[in-house]
Image 1 (cartoon, helix red, strand yellow):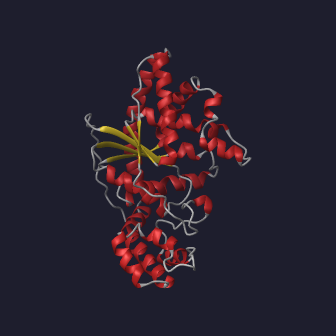
Image 2 (tube, rainbow, N blue to C red):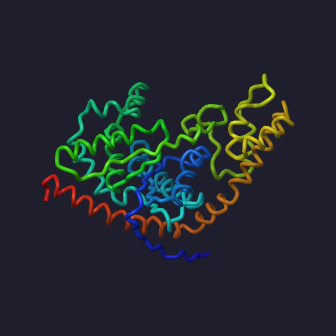
Image 3 (cartoon, one colour):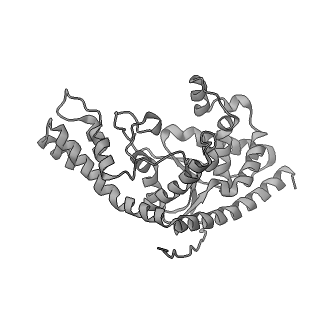
Length: 329
């Protein structure tokens, strides 16, 4: 079945602040990704922002080496964005590599201003080194490519969790170095710390993360959701299973939960069943939209194509300005 998708008409309101964020296509999305990031992207697209949200496929190359897996993940994450409520009429959705040439040019120029000891401060690099991992140049230079992502779109606002603030600090330092060396060219981006977003717990009580294997997939089947919820680690010494309660707060108000958990003290099976039902009810409409997009890939492809055209025009214009500034043309 072919579904006609209305053509997207882009416009730019120069009074709005530019907001930019993205997610790496390195695997299936889970409910932690939704509540920790995508939910905020959806809410902010209705505020006074000119929003750009991208699929960070170039960043994914630091770890993903399977061509088919990468292509599948790029498509899937875009479909997730749309299924969760990101509206292409309000938010420019694009694939990072659509402007890969311009990003790589900008990154090289920034690299020539950046010292090795400075990049050695990056949390991801230090963590990989501490674990004894073999570190590729892409991972080492990751913060500068991220700075290019931000500065290419003249972003004013970059929404990040408190543990990701360093990414924006690298971009801000790069602005300072470049503007001091060659003259005022880039605006100074500001981090928007999502302080009201709590750490999303996984089924083992730790932060939900694919690396921990403790996730609940965002669009899992009802059977998979039930199985995951029943696997949540509980503390048998108390009357309220705290890990279950912490996850339940994502789907109900604490006022509702206080009554429910008071009436079901010690009844872990009942409480887990209620949580599973709440998750199923919440994700069902998004899952339906996701499955529709999977069945109609031309919809997602059209959005990425038009978003890519939009950011390509911006990137070409910005790189022309940068090249003139540094004396390349």
